[in-house]
Length: 232
Image (cartoon, rainbow, N blue to C red):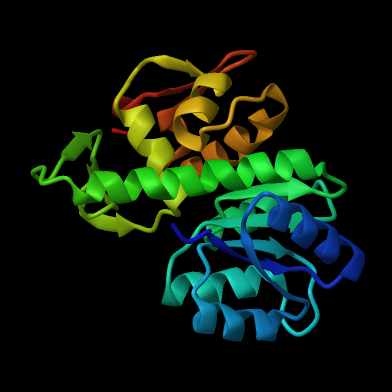
């Protein structure tokens, strides 16, 4: 079985080398690039299984790299940012990133999050290979078509990143039910760690921005509830 190929896009040589060494030790194939424009070119050429992408890059920044790569061939993206800035993270999620980490970060956590991203891709492929009829959810004017992996609201298609789609689908399977951040991390990200709950918060904000804030109720200290009738 061929080891997954990971494209690491990082312009700081020390960080790029450290990530490359650790992922190689974990059994991954690694390609490293330090320039935004080169990253788009290499991604199209080698078709990696996942992308680890720094935001600040020479040439074009990581957000534009993510946008261009996802427009050609969607793939899981773990974004690295030097600032713990919520706006930057929301923009990153909006252009197709699945997860993010703030520098400095532990290599152990980076590996764990990468493995979770790849597990989700494998699970989606397995589900797609099953000869099941199209599965569709209709709630509060929102239609979620799992077979086509598309979401529409009152007939208007709404673009979703892969992670946003999985999060919305899981919430829609449990309407009007409070789900903890830990539950969402476990079922959507395959990642169980309380320190990562802000990832959930950022993705919920993305769903609110796209579908309406009133549908996603915050239960302070616990998690979120999807209340589709609130949007009517």
